[in-house]
Amino acid sequence: MDSLTPLVVAGCGVFGLVIGSFLNVVIWRVPRKESIVAPGSKCPGCDTPIAPRDNVPVVSWLVLRGRCRHCGEPISPRYPLVEVATAVLFVAIGARFAGSWALPAYLVLGAALLAISVIDLEHYIIPNRIVYPVGYMLVPLFALAALLGGDWRAFTRALLAGCAAFAVLFVIHFVSPRGMGFGDVRLCFLLGLALGWLGWQYVLFGIFAGFLYGAVIGAALIGLRLRSRRQHIPFGPFLAAGTLTVLLAGTPLIHWYQQLGT
Ligand SMILES: [Zn+2]
Image 1 (cartoon, helix red, strand yellow):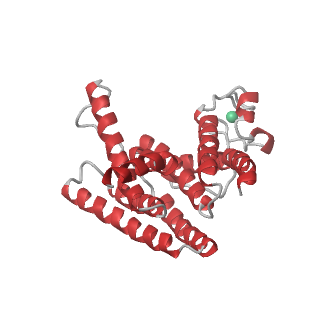
Image 2 (cartoon, helix red, strand yellow; image 1 turned 135 degrees about the vertical axis):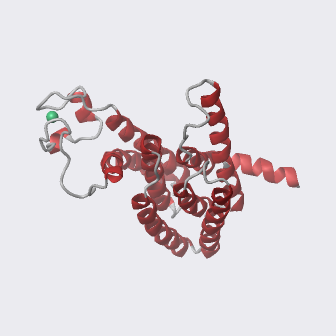
Image 3 (cartoon, rainbow, N blue to C red; image 1 turned 30 degrees about the horizontal axis):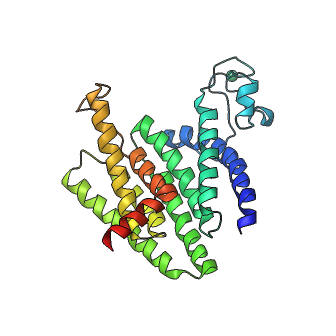
C-alpha cells in the first residue's frame, strides 16, 4: 500500500476540487431549501446558466477574474476558497488514511464537515438535509471497511461512540439549551462514529478539542468585542475542527497520554 500512497493522495486532491465545487452548490442551496440536483448552476445576477467551461473548479474563477462572463456581476471568492479548502482537506485525509479501508468514509465526513461549518457560520443552522444523508452514507461505509478489513470491533465501537457522543451532547443541550442547538447534538453522532472507529480516546479528545476551541475562540471574540455575550456564536465549526484535528493529528497526543498512565 505504501508505494500507492502518493497516488492516493494526489487522487484525493483532484477529487477534492470536484467535490468542493459540489459543496458550493450545497452551501448555497440547502439553507434556501432548494434542490441540489436540478436545475444546473446559474449566475445569481443575470440567471444565465453557467457553461461547463465556466464551471471548472478554481480555474474558471481565475480566468474570469471573479466576474460573470455575461453580466460582469462579481462572483464571491468564497467559491474558489471552498474548492481549495476541500482539496487541501482531502489531501490531508488521503495522507492520513491512505492505508485504511475507512478512507471513503473519512472523505465523506470531511466534505460534510466543511459544508456544515460554512452554513452554520452564515445561517446558524446545521441542516438535517446534510446530517441525515451523511449518517446513512457513513454507517454502511464503515460497515464495508469492517468487512474488508475484518475489524468488526472497530465498527461496533464506532456505533457505540456515535450513540455515546449524541447522548452526552443531548444532556448538555438539555441542561443549557442556549449554548448549543439540537443540530450540534445530531452532528455529534457523526463525529462520535468517525472518532470511535479509531478508539475511545479519540472520541474523548475529539469532542473535548471542539469544546476547547469553542471556549477559547468564543472568549477571544467577546474579549476583542467582535461579539457580545448575548450574540449567538455557532458551535458546529468548533466541533468539526476539534474532530478533524484529532482524526488527522491526534495520534501522537493519544500515545503520549497513554504513556502517562503506565
Ligand atoms: Zn451574470
